[in-house]
Length: 106
Image (cartoon, rainbow, N blue to C red; front, side, top):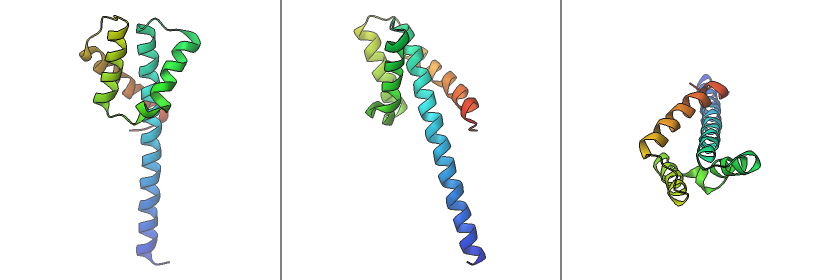
């Protein structure tokens, strides 16, 4: 294996590792946001965990941030939960920082 091949392999490994960390941070962020939203929706225990898990594991998990916020806002609206989009976005940012700390991402 040449030095170039070794460097290429190292870059590929680093990229794969970075992608794995990014995925884990994203999943943790969605889960924490889901627990926060579940609390606002009056859910607790298993129901809150199920709501958060849905945001982490379903098609919702592939949503862009705007779609995730819209999903939560729609759920809030359906249950007459008084919350602004700005509040949801602030919480999204707060839990992102917490998820990065938990997972060890940058």
